[in-house]
Length: 358
Ligand code: ADP
Ligand code: CIR
Image (cartoon, rainbow, N blue to C red):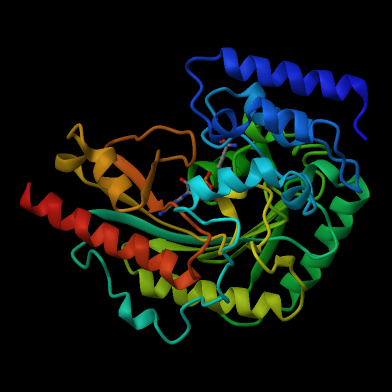
């Protein structure tokens, strides 16, 4: 059972959220007094409490989601909070629904012809998915030894990659020069440092131990190690050839998953630290210039209706620069991986048509 101090902090957090009129997170919306009272004393086997779940959204009132799962058990123990958040984020995925079988889109990538063959709109295309190593909890419950151990395991796998599209080198954050790190971040290859949402979730302990990036020479296949998720597998390249980007990601996922077992839940699919990434874990995005339609007041509504999410040029919680937006599928659960990519593909095709007509 959670101790009195923890319970008090949960109650104070609830009061803070209630008093914050400019907070519009899913956490605030779904953390009712009834949910607080039902869950505030509970503790997972690894010792995670409701405070661990909500503390990022309490500290960051501008959160969109506002909660994280410290371990896999949290998704069931704190279900009365997670389920409505999951349902609202992922297109109504209800408590009795199940994530379909994985379908990355093998054999179907040729359907995804270049969205912008003349190179007028799309700077680059990126598809990423997250994976958690089976047998390890998420960030707040990991020890320094766990980080080292996990990094060691995955480095061995990187060493076995032979395919010319995939093979490359692992660069640990520990020992990387600030200059190299900042350049990789500025070029959109590496995760940023000091994310306040992750820090408040207690997800950056022992940083930079166990954190790093693998990439091939061309920086078109990359793997982030131990940032928000244990692994983020990424395929990206200049232009709008979504089919090529997906083809490379499929190759990478299939090669790596043969060697490492990943955590999958029968209902929630591939498990991730943030409930927004559950299921497929796929975010397929383009960096795109749509100067005419993006200037319209209803641009966000157009994207919402297409089930697309708009981010800024440096990822989540950043702003657009030079009229370039990051537009991706929003939902990742209740659909297949291929459907997530197709959601982005069809939506972007439509946006380009609107831009041409405007
Ligand atoms: P994630 O996509 O893993 O959820 P972020 O939104 O923080 O995380 O984005 C991570 C990085 O990937 C950022 O630098 C972002 O600009 C970059 N990125 C995302 N989509 C694209 C894209 N289509 N082309 C180039 N870089 C991209
Ligand atoms: C928020 O609620 O805004 C942050 N905690 C991020 C939520 C979704 N993004 C993510 O998982 N990368």
